[in-house]
Length: 231
Image 1 (cartoon, helix red, strand yellow):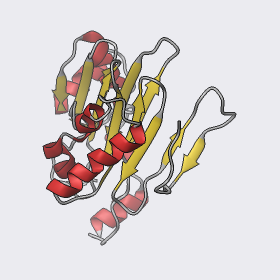
Image 2: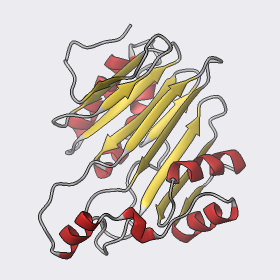
Image 3: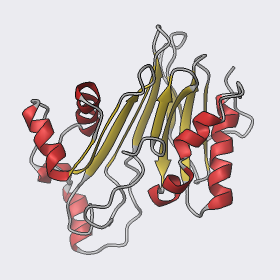
Image 4: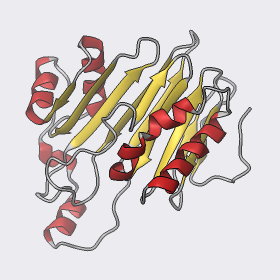
């Protein structure tokens, strides 16, 4: 919930085959913001905010809801009482590689607890919150948007793949770059064109899951050993 007790969502999606993208920000009453971002990407790449994003969703028959449905009673009481609560992690990112070698990335968020009305972070910004390019890989990020944006974290991670660097090393390079240049916490997940995966973060932990054809069920982690790598 933001400073006005409302939930405003941001989301973006990018297609690695065509570099097409779509993004929305500061929308209310949209049930699945990432679906709106995808529809924008397929329609005509652009960034729609607030009422324009909501209007696009309505005009294209995407699922809407009463904006109050996005707030739990517990959240509302905490906001009403100005309780000092920990920020709830609410950014969800995904990267994928299909059997044809096409990569995609998507990121969706409700921002940070108590943020100013209309504040937009990194999640909807191509290059910062996500990036996908079939020639290199796909990346999605999470964390402090004000720290992620100036180092263009997703593109920094993708560029590190150019020398056939393993995604785990490229992800760590991106996080090291952020730590060296700005203050703040962030994390990123990364997938290269070979299907190798990697992730890194400088927060206490970060929930990550991945699935491949060889697995019967997703592998799930809340923290990572420094030596972890997937060939």
